[in-house]
Image 1 (cartoon, protein in one colour):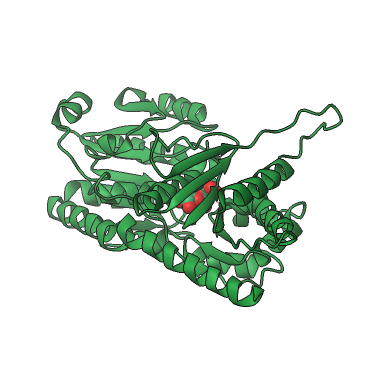
Image 2: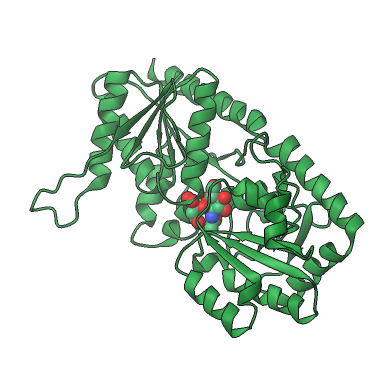
Length: 383
Ligand code: GMT
């Protein structure tokens, strides 16, 4: 199939999922055309079967707010027409689904029928979808898509219950990772450098937006250190809460035992030396970073919210704690760190869950089958 993929290329998990999906589809023989304002950062080196079409935004003086959505629409029309695409798959409702629906309708006037699949990821529903200044466009774009998927059952339900006016059928296709890439490898020299006295290591990876509640990771760490537990902490990523989190670490007197590494690739090397992964997020429709940790045999201690219970099996692959309950996070982390048998059991179960349920080889065929269904439905309607 020839598939156009649009996503936010620079920030966030939705762009990562879209890019990895495109790469996996290309490896399975499809031709993939990324249509975005810049090259998706996870795309890596040049690959056969993968093309990139940059959307340029016109700086016409009258446009105080250049209409990116329309530039994207025109680019979609062009790429579908000249590359003869079979389907457009857009990630994140706004504005990608809106542009794709409009492009499809323009193309239909020329007798070209290309279905639109929209994948909902998170804040496109939980924040943007609820904002009255976007809500009607979000629900219209979802309802007018030919196929809609959500990355968790939680997100499907949220869309249907709280995104006013959405009546579309939504298919749940969970996120995935390549467990051949995300696996625990021997990084003893690195562990030795970070934990020279054999300390245990906690890891948190996020974009440090307030929703990730990164300061709570420091609070948990501070409590464990106050009990004289030999433990260190690595924080990976960057964003608005990084400075407040560093400040808190200094205030609590634990800064010396923490490494703030900033943005890092490849994260699997850091996860390979971790003992526990902390995710105290206030909202998470899936929690891709937790899945990456699980694939690297790291038990996850996470908030019991959103889509996280669909990923982390409480008591088996880690623990789920009430949102904001620092005591519970501390107690559960301590439990895993102090009980070697429990740690080993959870590490093994976490890896098994990642491999058996969320590996790219299981999930990408679900998208392929879904594309076929959507295309057949459209073809049967257009004859
Ligand atoms: O909502 C965001 O934080 C951004 C969004 C994205 O588009 O990057 O992240 C969401 O999508 C990820 C990939 O599907 C999920 O793993 C994240 O859980 C989800 N984030 C939230 O729901 C906060």
